[in-house]
Amino acid sequence: MKRGVWLLLTLLLAGCGSGGLQQRQGYSVDTRHAALGARPRIKSVVIHYTAEDLPSSLATLTDNAVSVHYLIPAHPSRHRGTPLILQLVPEEQLAWHAGASYWRGATRLNDTSVGVELVNAGYRYTPQGRQFYPFAPQQIDALLPLLRDLTQRYGIEPQNIVGHSDIAPQRKQDPGPRFPWAQLAAQGIGAWPEGSRVKALLQERDPHQPVEQEALLALLACYGYQVDAALTPTERQNLIAAFQMHFRPADYRGLADAETLAIAQALVEKYGGWKRHVTVPRGKPSTGQPPAVARRDRHPDG
Image (cartoon, rainbow, N blue to C red):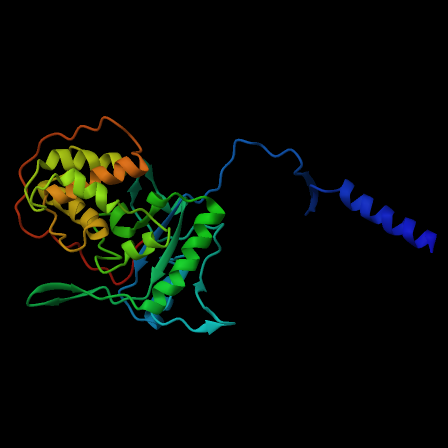
């Protein structure tokens, strides 16, 4: 009996002594000296819509041209009482979903983000203009725990949960103005301005009162959007429209107005800006027309 106890203790001590030592193919590594100067690769989550149905979305996103980490059907099936989400790429691997992109000084967001696609038709053209499709409640119910899990595991800051249109406003509109950013923020996920602060910053002005476009663009640059002197008037309007789709979806014509300025200022105050003292050179005034629509891709490009 005693011999058996001593044998067990010996095995346990041996296991403790080899903690951090790993044998691999032809060599071994010692992982017991972890450096403090490290951080997770993943810093942001980018949300898309597929503009296709589920079979077409799955075919597109499992091909070798574009990919995404997670795909959420419009009406997810259930597994053990929870919504079933499709994982197409392991989180530790890059997926080709962001394409040419920029956010808070970072480019090549494929390198540092998790991509989440929502099966959604996107929009259609009507005599009244573009009409975006809503997202099914079951789909958002599946998205919420996924985002909560990702933000907790990787320490993702609220302002780094973004839409494709935030990081590529000149060519993308997804997830569009029907995506429920405010609902996510109410659940503690993602950024959203304090309504009371926006109201205070408006100072009883008409929300649609025109403001200096340069002042608004400077705030958007401070918050994280890509703004530079080379932007054409149409590109400036596209950028403002992308911001409005996210934070003021009731009116996303891309016009610089008092409410949009107040929202941008409230966001910078609440979450901080990634850089200060941004100067936007003066450009031609906005046309006042809805922003141009980039080519509607069959699938998100990476």
